[in-house]
Length: 258
Length: 262
Image 1 (cartoon, rainbow over the protein chains, first blue to last red):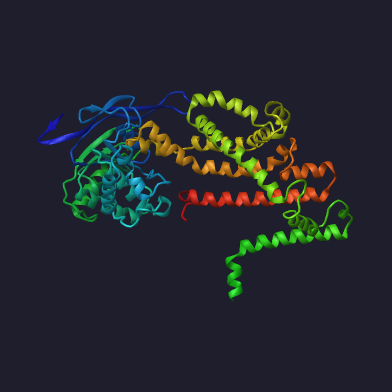
Image 2 (image 1 turned 90 degrees about the vertical axis):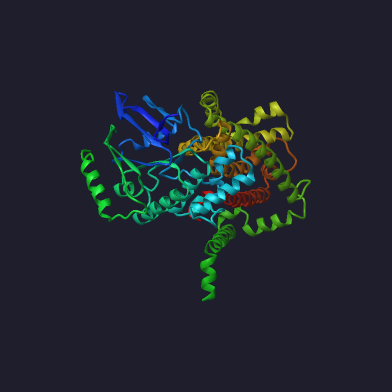
């Protein structure tokens, strides 16, 4: 296992490129170009880039849901080839199972992996409480608000005890106010139970509010433009001068072309 | 004030009752005061005979037995078609190979109406209940298959991905994701099928029978008994209405999760 300093590297993305067949089959559309980075244990890494730049594709490749055209993803020394519970995904459109209650959704991972009912219920309850949904165990997703559904999604990913969490613009569909609140909530949850997180967003404020490190991606095809270590204590303020200077610096480097 | 509240609350029930009442009144007036009365017995007579038929037998049996026997035939056939329809629909929806093999055959058989099968059905299954099961089965089967097929085909791929990421095996993906998410589709199919099966009962009972609501009509036709025909039609309509309403209630209960923003 690769070590750097005394912090373990959890996941490594090595020269990943991805091409799709064009719609008219006339050629290839390049989506990701030569993407390499690594994530350390309990690091909160944000992949920040414009909309439609292939971020979801990158998350799917990291998850093992799609394969890269070239390059590879290594998790704890093993190559990622297919979906596996070591990597938890939180989806933009929540992807909750609508026929299951909140409890049913959160305990799904441990259940299909054969954990006994008592243990998994206790774990699930712990995470439902952690995301602030105590009392909603029996509700169905259709009865919850957008923010609450996303909390269920986070609890479901946490409850399966993954080594790394992949979050694909989880707050992208929420209104601005709920979004701020969920960012604070996620920060609180992450502080109380640290996990390795790769978080994808197109929102600079969100990126700066959450990240230990930000990787700036360019437009399609995506490649890595620059990397920023965000050295600010939590909880952060959106109007802190340091926050604003980071913001200015990153914005200046963003790809302005369409 | 309280009357207004009562009306507001029960508006749809009141409307249903009013609609039925107007239909009966118009029917009654038309048959009593126009020449159409020659071909249309008055509603009151049909209702009277219908109620009477629960006490006095038509043929060998009273109405309750006729309805009971028909329900039994539809029940057996509907049960069988549910099992086979869901099995076929799921396999065509889930497996590309099964789809390639079975879908064309299914699409070929689908447009043949159940009634067209009567001669072959007698040849294969004889004159007893078996051939009636077969006719009604054909009436239900296609609806259940098509809906189940659509349901399994339209499963949200993201949900399958999410389940795999959480550690579900292929088998678990099938039983925990594909099946439950098809349930609303399957139920829609069952709802259409139960009505279709109940309608097919007339055709099925054309095949040599001594009882059943379909028999009432077939016999009425043979002997020119208009009132008996209409009593049979009333029974079919009424039971069909009860079945459809019951299925809708059951669906609302079983697929509660599917009713967005209850």
